[in-house]
Length: 156
Length: 53
Image 1 (cartoon, rainbow over the protein chains, first blue to last red):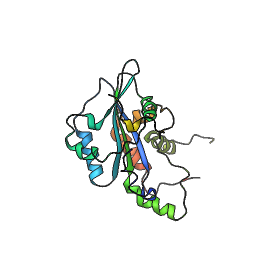
Image 2 (image 1 turned 180 degrees about the vertical axis):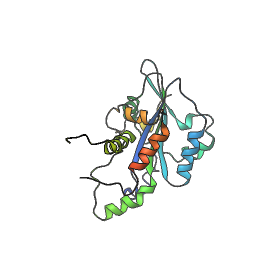
Image 3 (image 1 turned 90 degrees about the horizontal axis):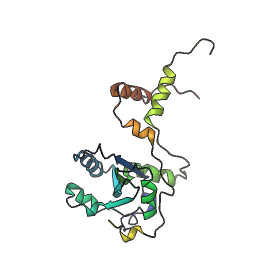
Image 4 (image 1 turned 135 degrees about the vertical axis):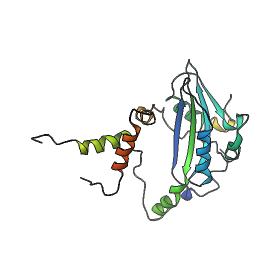
């Protein structure tokens, strides 16, 4: 791992998230649009990219990982690549690729939520401890509001 | 392509095999009525929605 993550005090770090975005073989449509949005998030200071990998899962289940630096023409991503830390270990790559379908390609992104860092630091300084976090699926929100809207049947 | 040396032999941070998140995959798939979905979600997160405990 590079020193990128250790240069800052751990107390100043924001929450770190990851996503695996899968592109099935028949549905890949790389237009650069994702790169533009990613760069906008980093340039605005909303997030800091920590690690990026491109994973390919063959039909036989074997996995190949490509570093961003190994891509010939990174274009505007070049500046971001220089700041990455190699946080993910080989075991992590196996674990993340478990979610992929054979024959697909996936982008793995690890990022720090810079927008949340000052609040998280303040909470820690105040003695707070993170005891739970998570993400609420959109489907759960839809189900909740629809349940509220459903007519109450007689006898309930 | 071989992994970089820095990634080999280290303790990982993920900890366990990751399962495909079907619900998220469905969420980003354009459905028959994306506008209606957006309206429903917007209503759900609008301030003032009554909370019952």
